[in-house]
Length: 535
Image 1 (cartoon, rainbow, N blue to C red):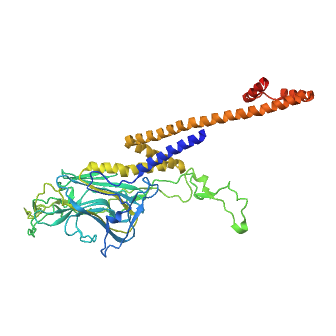
Image 2: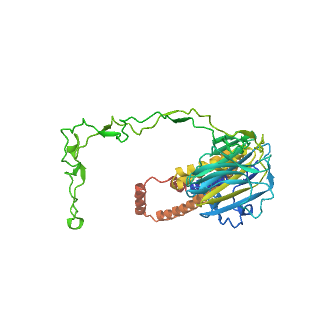
C-alpha cells in the first residue's frame, strides 16, 4: 500500500511536469506589440492566398521542422516544388504606416535541402490599388525586399528599398551595397532581421547578431544612392579630338642592347654540380619487401603469382638512386623580354571629364525611412530547389518587439533542440521535457507555484484522510482475530482437560516434550498461553 501511494504521487508529479513542458513547448500564436505576426498554424490557408496567376505553378506545403524539433508540433510554410515559380501573400486589413517610427521585419528560415540556385526572401507589399486579392502577379509592387538569394556568383542577403522620387514620381530600387552572406546549411534554422530606424539607419541581423549597419543618407551605402547627386555629367559634352590624356609615352630614343637575349631561360643546370659518390645509379627507388610472406590461404592457381608489396629501397637513403640530374640554378644571362622605357608625354593635357551641370532629377529626402505604407506580406520566389521553410514572420515598428518574439521562438527552439540532441533515447527526451518544465516554471513563477501547491496539498490531504481509515481497518481486524484465536484455544483447553481427566499421562508427557523442542513463540502465542494458564 505504501509503495502504491509513492507510485501514485510520482505519477502525479510526472504528469504535472509533462503538462508544464507541453505548455512551454507550444508554438507561439501571437506577439504583443507586433503589427503582424504569422506562426503558420494549421489554419494558415484562411489568412494566406496562393497566387492564381499562370506564371506561379509552385505549391506550398505546411511542414514540420527537421528533427530534432525544439518545439514539437511547430510547422512552417515550405516551398513544395523544384524549378518552379512560387508566390503566396497575405493582405492586411489596414495598411501599416511606419512614418516617424521606423520598421522591423523578421522571419525564420529553415533549409531542408541544399539551396544551390534560388531565393529565400520576403517582400513587404506596397499599399496600393495594384494589390490583387487573387494573389501575386509579376507586377505586384513592393516597398522592401529582404532575405537570402543564392545562384551562381550571387550569395548574399538582399535589402532592397523601392523609393519614390519626389521630383519625378518614378520608383527606383535602392540596393544595399555591403550585403552579408546568408547562413543556409541543411537542417539548420536561422533568424533574419531587418531594422529600418527612424534615424535613417538600416541594420541587418542574422541569429540576433548584427552583420551590417548602413545609412539611407550615405551615397556609398546604397546603389544607386537614395538621394541623387546635385550635379551630373553633361550628356552633351564631348571630349575634343585633339585632347591628349596619355600621361606617359615610349621613349623614342631608347633601343634594345645588342647583347640582350630575350630567349635566355630563367633557370639552367648547375655546371658546378657533381654526382655524389654514394649515388646508386643502377638501383631502383623501390624494391619488393624482403620480410613479406604470401598469405597462408593464397592459391596461385586461383589468385595468380603472389608478389610482395614494394617498399623504399634502403640503398637510396644516403644520396639517391636512378638517373642523376644536375640541379637547376638561376641563369646569370637571363634578362627577360625587353621593354621600351617610358617618358612623360609633352603633349599631355590631363584626364578629360565632362563638365558638371545641375541634376534635373535632384531631390533631397531627409527621411527616407518613412517608406510607403505596407499593405501586406508576400513570398515570391523562383528556385531550383524545394524544401525552403518560412516561419514566424513578424512586422513591427519597435525592435524590442522583434527581440522578445525571437527569444520565445528562435532562441527557445534552438536551446531546446540543443538539449534534446545532448541526450540519447528516453533519457534524452526526459531531460528535454524536464528542462522545458523548468524554463516554464521560471517564466511563470506565480501560476506554477499555485499549481504546485495545489497538487502537493491534494496529495497531503489524500494521505491524511486515508491513513486513519486504514488504521481503523487494521485495528478492527486485529481484535476480531484475537477473539477468534482465544475461543479456539479455550476449546483446545477443554479438550485437553477432558483428556487429562481420562488419565492419558503418556500423551501429556509427549506434548510437554514437543513443546520444549519448539522455537521461541511469538508475542501473540505467548498471550494465548498466559490466558490458557489462567483459565
